[in-house]
Length: 188
Image 1 (cartoon, rainbow, N blue to C red):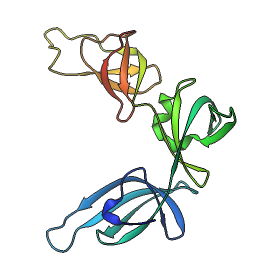
Image 2 (cartoon, helix red, strand yellow; image 1 turned 90 degrees about the vertical axis):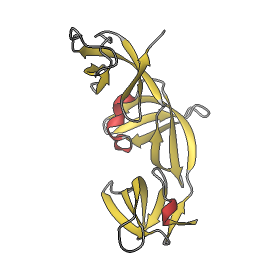
Image 3 (cartoon, helix red, strand yellow; image 1 turned 30 degrees about the vertical axis):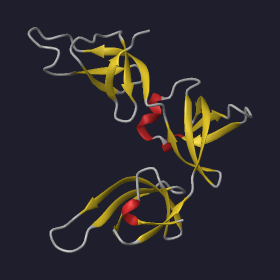
């Protein structure tokens, strides 16, 4: 399906120069002189190579239709994630690099959404938030107020997150998976 280049959004899959690409980032740039153009960072679905491409906003690109399907994460096997279809109980192997550093958020039996183009996985979405335990956090500095600043903390999955000063090591917190940010203390 053809669409104008200025309608390209992150997560879409497009066909360009005979290859399928998943859009990672897009930005419309309006220079002082001349017409606006769109700068797109994208990854080749077959090779995994990244590239940047520019189009004028009036140009058209071929957008591929994606189908979303829910899976349950089972385990990681080398460079692949093993997912189970909750309806048919069939297993699917999906390359772990489809998630990048967010693979650290995967937990047993977590529901994930996989985008497929003609049966091939092109993207994977995690739940918006996950609950994780803090394994390391700096102590509270005397005189520091709760609103003044955040401190670094290490999560059980190895990632770092900035948390309010009142959060201590051993506590469980809710973390936004999109940008690895603190949401709230876990009340459970």
